[in-house]
Length: 502
Image 1 (tube, rainbow, N blue to C red):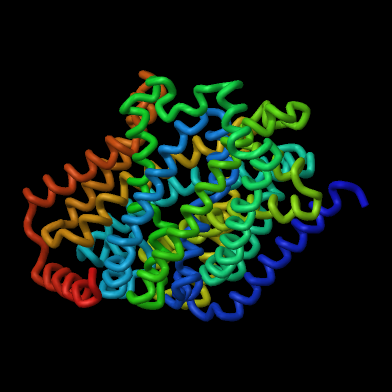
Image 2 (image 1 turned 180 degrees about the vertical axis):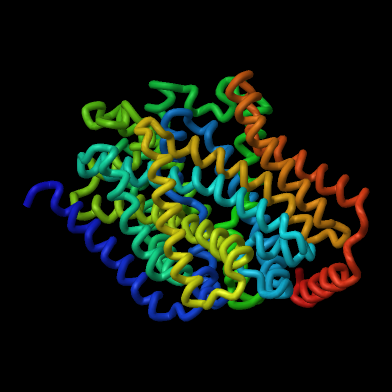
């Protein structure tokens, strides 16, 4: 048996299992509600692990280890920001959003929630929020396609153009067949595989480098800047704020918020929060350790650095290949595929939901049957996937760069609107629309002008979120107050939350 056959067999078994779960979920999908939100039936474990797996993506096993490998511990600020942001999202958004979406005509999507929350009879919120989802998720999905292509390119030696299709095929298939239940159930399996890989691999990397003390001494000897949290003062306040600001993005990510909306009850959320945060902290620590201590390992074994010298985002792939026998390596590399597939499938489904619920049903076919909506949703999954493959066709694409742009876009366009809609009864429809427009526009303009043309080091999500909050407050205050019905519903939601300890 050749060295590549165990990898091929392991990948094949994993992919077959994911597709079988998709088929099983298809048998439980009886309506469009089931297809895009699973009938609000997720328990605490599935809610937690599905939210975590849909969040982290190939960035966790490729982008983050690559960043720590190149930049050292100064790149860890991003993980601290993410942990704080995720905890706040679980603590302050998950429960209220679960209640509010059920009270607003059982809203199935974020645009649907905004429309009914503010009684937007002109449906401007539905249209604009759906457009934001499609634009930024096209970039986000492309990042998953790029990560999958990098994996197949590195492991099997296939050309990048061919690897694009191999990396996307299985994800498209099970999402197409099983919808939300398939995505959530496979996320649970994939999250388990990811944490296994991120606990085992860093341990073996450290042992292969001579232990923690020897590894730290070697890194200090070869490149002491990688032990400096502030890069010798060059990181600065702007750099630290930009890395920590990744945590702001959580409040506006539709694929994560959808997991909160799908929980079977409000009482599920606290337990899910404990499970989800424990999983997240362990995974982030493991991913950072792989990248950071990879410096020591390759300093000890320079002949094994291989493709990492050209692309730091391959550090986990290379370490898995050289440290383990092909069968174990196959399982570990399947974890990268799991991370990629879990997030990509969620994003494809959210895009499909926006196109189907918010455009097709909302404007073209309001009386469409459940069967028609499910099949149109499947067609949209395929369409968005093909668009993402087209965007990802550039072999020089970087996973982290694509993710950061999309993350900022959602965080600024939706995050302030979601937070204010849950907790401020005086917020108006026009205030929500102004916040979305201002947040999205600021991210794009800051990225294209301040960052690309003038070299600003400030992450575009920071000005985007600030401008969005200001726009919401100012426009809501100068406009007419919401109707009595809207304010009465808001008070009812707040009372329900108080009863449950929120």
